[in-house]
Length: 357
Image (cartoon, rainbow, N blue to C red; front, side):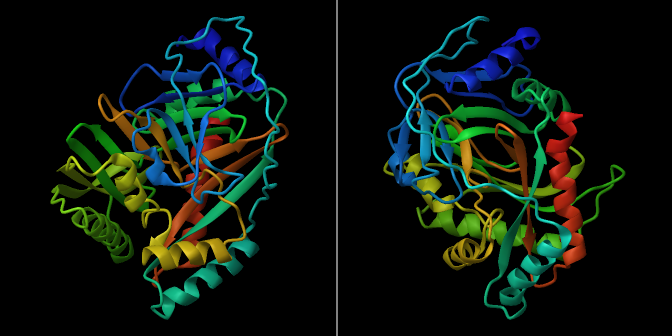
């Protein structure tokens, strides 16, 4: 897809309520494109229903009728021509919950609420989401912002998608959830955040422990399928102006285990939810006061015979007619401080702010 005229095409597809995704995997130079040209995308209510499916998958943090799992059928995999007139029979659009910015005082109240079960050792880790809503300027272009992110963040997975059911989302994420084909598969533990001002990155106990918790969780989930992965890490990786700790897991997927089943076991990871898994997930649903929708869910191409490339949806924005809501989160442990987490989420929100400059 050539950038010179394609940002206009992407904006036009959004206006026409097309179901499409354009994405640029890390280190690749040319974005890929998928679009469904007829009918509505497949809507699912359980991650395991992804077994046997093929297409571009968009899954929320929490599956609801307002934010279902969506599979875009790849009818078209090359750029539409300029001047394309694409029309669908539009169903009633969902009424998305209005977002609001979380200021520092509100964040402090939420931090204290989340920190209590950590300091009492009821929970090991919780991830607290922060949002920032800004007015959408008249000249703002989702298509142009996608290509800006592609240039600024070559090491991240960059995407822009739209469906009538989800609305429009744009993001830049460093976190792979699952990739592979046939028997050979790969996942990663990504946790800990630093914003270094030089090439040298040092890690404190809090970040090392956070990384250890995610690594242990993945080992436990994989071992439940009798999978023994080859492990590499942890090591430091850069993502925009941030640095993270990363550990790689390479493994063979037994024939009787399907990717949808494995995705259900992995999501939500401690990198977006917490530990223990079920208790942390429920605590977030009960206490966060913000509907994450597709933030901290996962998305990407699902094709078990050729290529599956699924990423956790981090550092993203929900694009609406009059506003843009940016999402970021940070992992809290008993040793976390409110000031440091507020600063960390501020740096993560800048990932999306910088592409609009």
